Length: 437
Image (cartoon, rainbow, N blue to C red):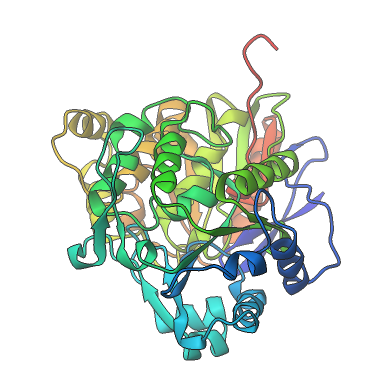
């Protein structure tokens, strides 16, 4: 059967056996536009008065709308203008509106990205700022402590806003269980040290710091506790279908609206694993998620519940922006071929550096499959660098990647390998059955 996979901003079509184990999301279709879904959700929120009612007694100060950065494919241009128009129709002045990009430790957004994410009208006419986790002048300490006992500093513009609106994409997340909701605040708006704690060795070594798990997940516990210290006045949770179109919007109180959205997402894209596969074939999610190898790691980790021990992974991502941050690139090259040493170094607090957590999650894959069984295909990274990224490297041109992947699959079929398929990459996250079930 012919199956479409997302690769960069394009698609790859591969011919697969009819009996492969297919993992793909199954969202209910909707005929409503993104604007209609937004207006319906803010008029009938979960656990909250309507947005219009909440705006009446708001405090003096800017209305801050927290948005995701370019690594999340939320089509803000489809509903953000409608949200802003709604605010202004309820007495909010244009100059009172600030759009705050929750970057976490990611780089600042570019003008080109803002135009792409928000549309020309919003990008050119409204105040947009990026969170900077290392800028002490933009941080303010909160009263109280987090779940782990840490003091917390957040973005000043968010803390001191007269009204806070948080938006986010709810999808399976390979550390925090599900993204969205509280995750916009932590790691989105916290200080560098809070991000380091959230992504540190001890949190990520916990078995429940994994996709589709919230209960007893230290990442979920930590960022939920931080969000409670300075909660938003209103939350807008966005769900995307397999084409990255807005499928559902659930608004309201931070935690109750997030729970309802998680229940919806879990039912649509977290299928139970009925049989373990010899080989997993996966996209890394397409652009913008596969713009760097750093983000492509999510696609590798996502396969693990559906794969046998010492199974094989065939993954591919565009990597149009290369490997990732300079810090991440340095780690990957330094510890190439020696990931046990990396784990020992971070476990013993020999260092902490930006983006180290992605390699720690990557090592979960290596421990289950071995490096030789992790085949990674890309047209964005040359062999001299790809061979240092703890994968079995396959640099290819864009023109040849489809035919080369097909040959690899045909060889697996000829060897009678049972194949699990992930056309959407990590946007559909399999859930392992409990032992003995």
